[in-house]
Length: 344
Image 1 (cartoon, one colour):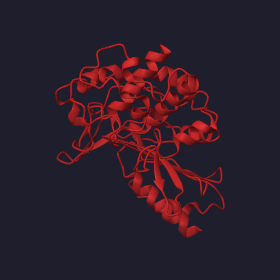
Image 2 (tube, helix red, strand yellow):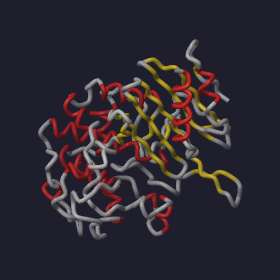
Image 3 (tube, rainbow, N blue to C red):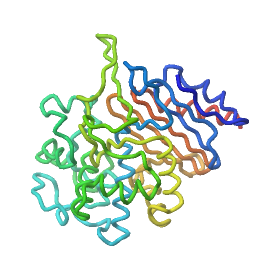
């Protein structure tokens, strides 16, 4: 097991003790801008016993929606788009049964009603998508269109909030239509590089670069782990699928909150309630506290993948946990938060 990096006087032992010893991935905690705990657990390559490290790149599933949201907000600030731009005015191809009057705002805050290719309210297993449509064909956002473009709208645009993966696929396509660049190329140049996220990108599963973790699923019948290469998109899309490191995630928060990716005004909009439920801004989930203040998080979950990163401005506390075994990163956060509170 690779040893973690601990910080003298931080009380790190309390944090390690509350993390399940079977956890696979990386956990990092920053308080008042200082890292007070970080440690990798388990293996990036299970059969060869290659351990996870602090520089391991992990898949993050829907966490990429936060990156796409920033890219879209940048284009709005540049005057290339507006919140009220309609998808029918940007996308030149046939959108089938999709309402052409859906706005960029409605895509960003999950109120569009666009048919969701993976409706998490009725589907349990993402891998089920590929029973009749091979996942190896999914290498661009446009490749996902056959999975939803001919389905009926779920509800009228703006009617309600319902988390929607297709909406961010369409945002990825809008980025491409406006900039002339593949959405991941645009993100690399305008989000990842400015944020110092040199170890973040969208990679094809059959062409992974060095230091990427394999993601593992447990087969209860055969009592063994297998990789998720036939269970998720071959390459990430606007809906998610970026690979990143904990350090890059922390750099993203730092540059975002210090207005180095978008303006302070736009950051305030991104981190303010944009739906009646007060649970979502633009690409970021909001957690309202008893005093009416919010903490912010983004997360992701795919077969063999789990990611959770939350920032509490009241405590200036940032907790990030990533697992390449689909472990319960939400429980890790809860236990660390409890330990932090008890530590005072």
